[in-house]
Image 1 (cartoon, one colour):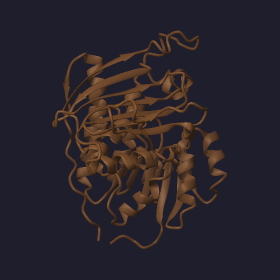
Image 2 (tube, rainbow, N blue to C red):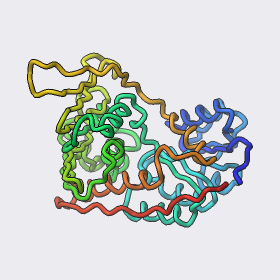
Image 3 (cartoon, rainbow, N blue to C red):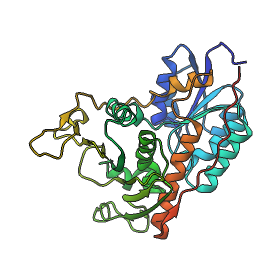
Length: 359
């Protein structure tokens, strides 16, 4: 049985994780009992807001402490998988920042841990499903309002060049803009069309950063742009990419083409995301204007999915299932494989066993 007491939470990684800690602390159904960061300054700064939380500088000590029922993992990308496996095998539910893994071997280890622990839940923080524009688009596609969707183009416009060249991303020669950025759009696309790509190819480039005075070819080996062309079982195609070096504000450009309509979410003309617009075209006649959708494009709060995940732990339907979370990583890893090999790659999806109801 699930205890009626508030779920005890820990947070690992106190960058974005600091925001997650605030979300947990403000919800009466949850209690923040432990926090962790390798950096003592970050631990002291965030810990000062949550004085009752235990403090750790090692995530595995936190996991072994017996002080939590669920954990947020918001450490660096290449540290996620080991912490997920350790938490699941310790009987702890996991809410993880994307990606769940940075290699196929890691992903398979995560799936094996899930399958060893079918009463536990895992969710990834891919937030774009919560955007009102994309929720509307999901309903429009499902209702047949766009006809048959045959193509989509989605671009993760990061617009934050310094984050590729400096900080932990720049220090990681294996950092992937696909796993760090495109994965949001991969998850969004598969959710919108309720279909998974079967094969894909890709290309990558560093032309957007190589001109910078911050660029060091001996240190910065990562691409700032990667693009994939995907094929789906239905015959649908898509182009999905991440462009980290673009001279634009951070934005998710989405174009979906159906036989009866075209949806476009286009970048803002002004300085803020709310200045952007979404349009639905229903005619090929240039005299017929598109419908401008009166729907906001907010920056979804980083912790918005945590309360729903807590509900899933207590028996509610998941907003993003374990299989969906794994599928998005499997596609992203296939994209990176295609970029590095220059080949058309078949996407293989590890199978996650159904979750058991604790009640």
